[in-house]
Length: 121
Length: 357
Image (cartoon, rainbow over the protein chains, first blue to last red):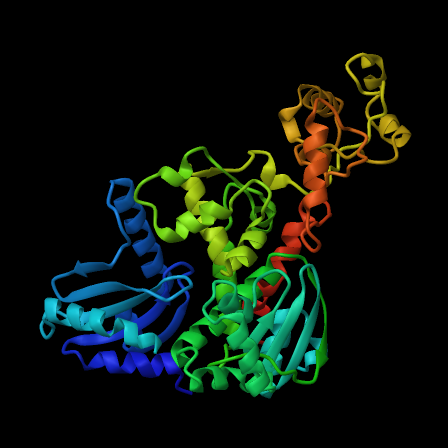
């Protein structure tokens, strides 16, 4: 049965090169939904731990403000973690795997960020 | 496998999943709770140990109380309330699903860190839910992961749940803290447990406990070093005044057995090694050849009865206060070792036993 979260995520696969997306709880690491290749989207708990660690270290180094995104690049792929703000409640993470051959990182990230808020609609 | 033979809760839920059962499983114990199934999938779990989806929506003001009451009046069937909230534009379908799913996992975690009880099966009851529901195996695996994640120097998550952390001075002035951690810091006051904070903020218990461990790692909050063992009674043999004390060394010569018989009841102790006098007494017991269990127990802290015989050195006042603040369902007494065994036999046990079919 397709859930509302899955249905929202499927739309994000339209961006060229995006192979898998998942909506993850940024605190608990619980995965609420996946579209496309779940492995490419990344494990929810690991992504949440990584984002929390980076946010903590940035804060300790004096950075102000909330973490917005984490972008990792390998020779073949991009892995993007985008913070999704909520009106109230714990923040969410949109995790996306991208094929480096096909994706324009800047465009795809921008597109994901623009549509991240729609995921919860 | 029939549900009547299920050896634990995960096995029961897996059996009900295979039958495509719709109904309610009432779990006794501390905190206990109610598990709602539809078509074999878990759609909602309610427990006094963690805020329900309704609290998560109402406490932080995602939906205000008047609107909520109006919605409940317009759609009296709680089972269909979620659909109404979405169609009325009060919340997005995906967001409601996120809240409801998070609540299922959080409540399961809250139930799993307490000692398990028995269960009874009932007919379906209306409950707020959204989405397809959760498969029991996924719930069990995630609960196990959470319990492992929150096991640390303080012991099992059940120990962490009893801790009442206090903020270090000027913790709120630290730069670079996310808003979420600031809000947790604002509720940390040395009297609240993680559960209290979860209800105060309308957030999940597991999320709060995770944030507390992160804040503690950053030295923004602290809890007493003796705190983790709090709530467990000592199993140290009772030592009557004058016996086993430093001024009675002669009685230790003929081994400990007669002394143990002469001292039938264990005495509750508190504060671990923090009392000079208390630790001295325990050292003497060890030297006298008491059982290893007694030595392990001697390091534990008692259940903190106000009328405890061993109130001394001003620690007693603190004990008294702490004992008075232990909320229902939080206090748990049992010998060391038993509790952890119970915990491991809670939800996580089903990873191996729950899907026998």
